[in-house]
View 1: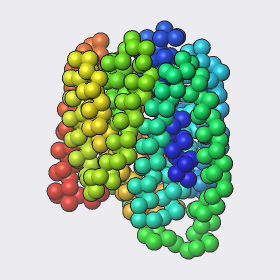
View 2: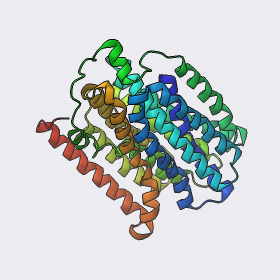
View 3: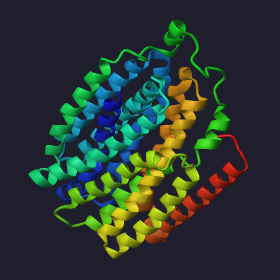
View 4: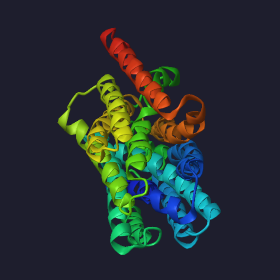
Length: 373
């Protein structure tokens, strides 16, 4: 199951390393680049919000495998339509829809398999996929000189093999009602955490799960690599650094709170802004580590909350909602492209950093007051 999540994260995120190549080959504007990046979320959100509840009713496999098939179809559209911007948007939309179904059903499936560190393994599998995809695709694109085609030739068999492996897993694949009938109530299978309490705990921090990485490898890395022949590799390196840091953060910083993650991410925003304006690639990499810590820490806290407080029979619904809130952060580069002509990009990015700091203070106050998470 971890392989399916890793491969899906790879398919969803490897595209960011290829954005500079698409920008150059199709002569895209900054708004078009942000749209190609952000349209993924338009497919992702319904995939998450419908896929999670459907997997609760129909079973994890019944949602994950069709979602994986959509990922394959979307990847093929991106490969075959690489010279047309409309095909780029359509492919990314399909990838988003498929990824949403796989993320929600696959995460619920993996958490349902149990184990003391199921939530940690789920977050690590996703973060590794998100990081390996841009790094590998950037390196392949630069090495082959075919950045809009060659990376997909590795991705397609990777997806196929991961989905085949997931199809062979039988434990936890049936609907929640079937599992309950077969084995009785799971531990903690009482009334779920109330949705209002869940949203109060998760919603303010969740968008930063992907706002931090998006700023790292779209806004900051995109700025320092613009015009470089090695741009796909440079963006891929920043993406990998950011997301590998996110994968490691929950293991290295055991017990780290969302407040710490938000504060680290805010520091990464200010550092990345300064480095990008100075054209300092090393500074952008360093900022990416902080932004990755923010990503990984907040994601781990959300997954731990779902694992501890949400029964398996509705876990897909809660995970779908959590990921949907998280992926709102993918719209941050597009938002910046819209407001930059009015506020200036530097002021807009600095405002985001200040907002993250304010939310870190809020989370710290909630923890000190013992507010239920």
